[in-house]
Length: 103
Picture: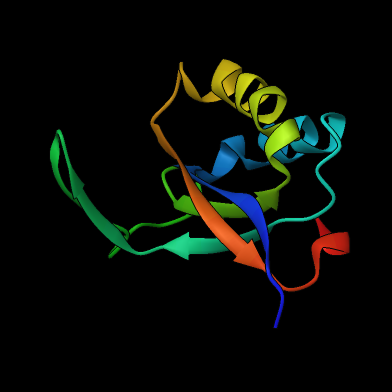
């Protein structure tokens, strides 16, 4: 089966920032994304867990999207403008897809 190279972007941020990020993705022409809850993690400031939290103010989410390489810089510039002032992690990895017209 033929595959096509793309870029996968994963963005972990506090839930209240999600709407601004999805708006920025739409502005840069990203056609789709998936959001999943983040239950726990460990990083520079130690352990973090969602256990016992009430409400969404400190809830973390991961947004996943796949884009064409030519669109990558524009997407990252828009996202970084938001995430750089917040708690968040942005990663980019190479992926192969089987239906390139979806991205």
